[in-house]
Amino acid sequence: MEMNFESILLPGVDGKRPIVIAGPCSAESEEQVLDSARALSGKGIKIFRAGIWKPRTKPGGFEGVGMEGLKWMKRAKEETGMYIATEVATKVHVEAALEAGIDYFWIGARTAVNPFAVQEIADALSGVDIPVLIKNPVNPDLELWIGAIERLYGAGIHRLAAIHRGFSSYDKKIYRNLPLWHIPIELRRRLPNLPIFCDPSHIGGKRELIAPLCQQAMDLNFDGLIVESHCNPDKAWSDAFQQITPDVLDYVLNLLVIRETNQTTENLSELRRQIDNIDEQLLELLAKRMRVSREIGIYKKEHNMPILQTPRYGEILENRSQMGSSLDLSADFVKEILKEIHEESVRQQMIIMNELK
Image: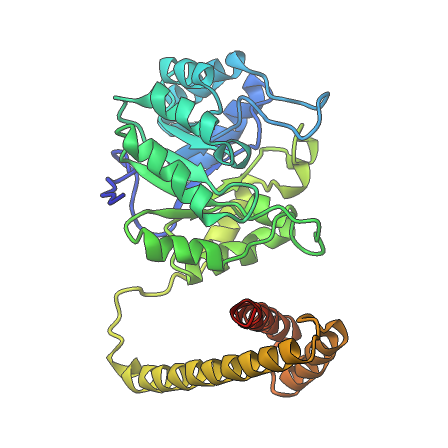
């Protein structure tokens, strides 16, 4: 589907990078919403966010104040002049938020993973001119993310943007949700005119990671940031560890280095030609390796040997990873490449086995 996106900017919102959406994870009380909105407005933030309905992993936790919070958001808008944004997950949410004058919607990661839920929201918004931001699904599935965008676009909502909030994983050594930057980079390649925001709060899960994640997003030419900022984050009712005060947010934003995106790349031409030549050599070597893999497949077939030789695969991973480290290559990077090469080698040998039956 060819998509021509319209600007998500509303009057008075500067399109200069980064476009910032900020506010608490959840609307907790009228006082908390207004205090946070006033403080953020005083720092120049134009779009205020707060969750009214909070999808929780397990029942029994704080799931948002519901409809009552929309009144507080509306008052914050009237008092500060900020635009207001919240998450919607159902038709009922959409209708209530529209009636309350919410200016921006976002679709959360748990909703984006469900095509039925996304379609319900798209149908409820049909004919409504409102900016909608779509978070990536919880699992690393680019097609599912694009599918959600296409459903909204197909309903006539063309003021769209994506939010990269990271991807769930059992491996939570550093991040709450793995960045997997290559996925939003591929989204940008596929949909070059779609604005992309970074959600450093949900990627990092810790306050100290917000600043470096914001800088990484800017270095990757993201358009904006959506950051959780609470007037008293230590007392927050949800996700306290990943929220920062408006003062800290202002400090983080002022430290950002925004690199020039319109510079000429003429001086890079020679280096890029070298990259092109190296890539050609890599492809030729990979093709040669697969030819050898097919010859191995013929040998295994003739000698009634199984395709998969687990000890050999383990030996390759160990030895090549050590070799990569000696060449200043990340061991994880080398292992990932070897994993893909091995899978293709196995596929090639399976083709040979089938052909020789």
